[in-house]
Length: 98
Image (cartoon, rainbow, N blue to C red):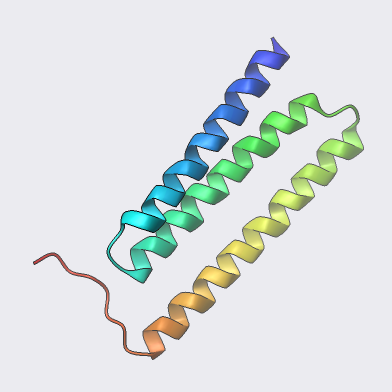
């Protein structure tokens, strides 16, 4: 049962990574691309970590995975904010529908 749950979580995480990449390639401006890649990849990584935590052999391994996810969340939020702020300073306006 644990193997099935782990496989489903890993599959769902992979799906969100692919969806984030599709958003990165398809969305019209930097702001929507940042949103797609940040949100989808954070959720995808979280699902992958949960799937791997189910397969961890010790509590320390699971804790390390959780720590990696926490650091990745912090880095992702910080870098996307810095990119959006720099782009905004350059005068790039958000996309509006015609």
